[in-house]
Length: 398
Image (cartoon, rainbow, N blue to C red; front, side):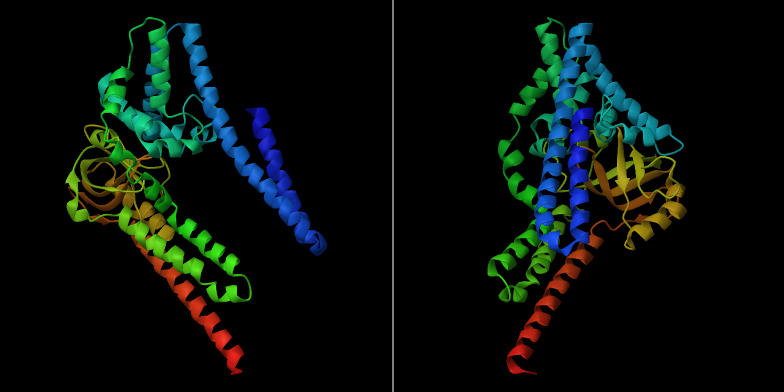
C-alpha cells in the first residue's frame, strides 16, 4: 500500500510540475498540456486502482485472521462491534475526531461507513436484525457503484466471506448469510435495476449535460461554435432542475418510519429520497464538538441517523444556525420530516424539525439546486443572446 500510494503521488507531482512548466513558457505550453493531461488521467486511474488494492487487501487480511485464529465468527462480531464503537466514539466525543478521518485507509474499518452497521448493533446484537442491513450492501447496485470510492469493502460482503470460511471450518455461523442470500434472491430485480442506469446518469446529470454541451460546441467548431457557447450552461441548468424533482419528491406523501426500517430497505437510493417522518431525540451534532456544526444526530428506539440541515442562505446560514440554534435542539425530542438517502454513509435531508418545546426549525435542501439550476439556465440564455447580437452587429455593421 505504501509503495502503491507513493507511485500515485509521484504521478500527481509529475502532473503539477509539468503544468507549472507550461504556465511559464508559451512555447512549451502546447506540448506540456498533453503530457499534463495524460499524467492527470494516470493519477485518476491510479487512485481507483489504489482503492481497489485497499479493498482486496482487507479480504486477504480477514482470511488470514480466520485461518490463524480458527474463528471467523469472532471477526464477524468484531466488525459490527467496531462499527458500533465508532458510532459511540462519535457520539461521546467532545471534539471532532481527526484520528478516525486521517486513518480511514489504514484501519480495519472505514469510519464513514460505520454508521449503518453500528446503527443496527446499537439496538440489538441479534444477528437477524443486523443481517437486514447487509441486504443493501450485497444486492443493491448503488452499493456496487459507491463502493468504488471506498477504502474498505462493504461490511455485508466481508461478513459473507467470513461466513463462508466458518462453513469450511465446520463451525456454526454467527450471521447466517444464507438467510440474507435467500432473501436477496427474492428481491424484485426490476425494482433494483429497472431505473438504475438512468438514475446513475441523473445522479451526475448536470456534469454530463455540461460535458455534452461542450462536445456539441467542439463538433460544430469555431467560429460557428461561439453561437452554441451557451448550450452547456442551458443543458446543465435543465438537468439540475430535473434532478431536483427526482431527489425531492412531495413531502405530503411522507410516512412514519424508524431508522432500522430505513437502513434495512434493500431498494434505498442516494438519489431518490424517501419522504419520511421520524420521531426521536437529538443526541448531538453531526461533527461532535464542532460548536458551529449545523448537522445533527437523531436517535429513535431503533438506531441513529444524521440530519443534514441546509439554510436558504447557504454555508453562511448553516454556520450561524449551528452557532445559535443547533445547540438548543440537543437533548430534545423532535419530529423530523424530510428525505432519507442510503449510501456508504446514509443521511436524512431535513425539511422541518419540530421539538416538543421550542421553535420549529425549517431547512431548505432543495433550494440551492433550484437557484443554481435557474442561474445556469440564465447564464446560458444570456450568453446565447449576447453571441447572437454580436453576430448580428458583425453582419449589419451596427
